[in-house]
Image (cartoon, rainbow, N blue to C red; front, top):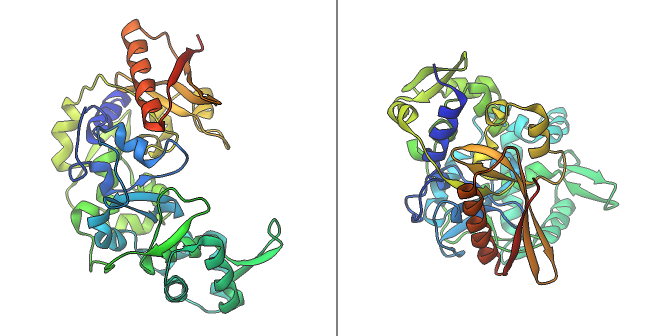
Length: 361
């Protein structure tokens, strides 16, 4: 029988949130992808794991899981392309949401549709090109089942998810730190025949966000549960988490039993630690879960001594930068000092001076 604190401790250790320093090569979360959303996105997540600031020479930014932008090691891009490939036509249909309906009605296979979009995108993006221009040119050459009318823009576009998921297939990356996004060709792009165990997304989820069920993994990938079950690792072993049967890779059983981190971190709103699909395990209190995962405007999470202990938000006014912390429990002096140290690190990451930390207690 495993309780939630053991699960969280295991994930802190597996995701290397308890280490002081690490390298690009040995940073485990880059195997599954580090979501790069918002100012405290992918590179802040890497900084929280002891990785020094990196550039586009080291990292590649791709639209992958759930169509979100994720950072990876540039040297792994071929394996990543194989890893994020839909499992089947049914899986591809689920991943592109409402865009699947007109394609099916027209008798167009979903994977074939992604390939067609990718081929067109590849021809358009011969040099760095802003997303809006790529979208507009695609709308001129793609037939009706691929297109939708966008009321806010008062224009016809390709559906968003096929656009995003086709980009990797086209060998296209997103240039770092561009808004609106700029797409460009990945130098020497060649997808691998298979991702291998390290980049297999089912295994990576169990390794970094386990113990988990097939539904947890399917929800993370936006894939059908049946497809995930068909690819369930042969070396996954059952464990009971607060009475629920879940699975973990056999090689990680000892780590689950022994992990006991005592680290404090300011996690960005889309940090992998917060992306686990068992939110009730992460935050059992429903009111606090709603505070951490609102519909709009997510805060960051305070991780203290292996548990989630509150939320935080950056406050910037002119040259002044403060961090507002909303604790969920009384924090001892040592933890508050650690939070201030993390806020100093965040300010340095942002390139500003820290004016202070506001504890709302």
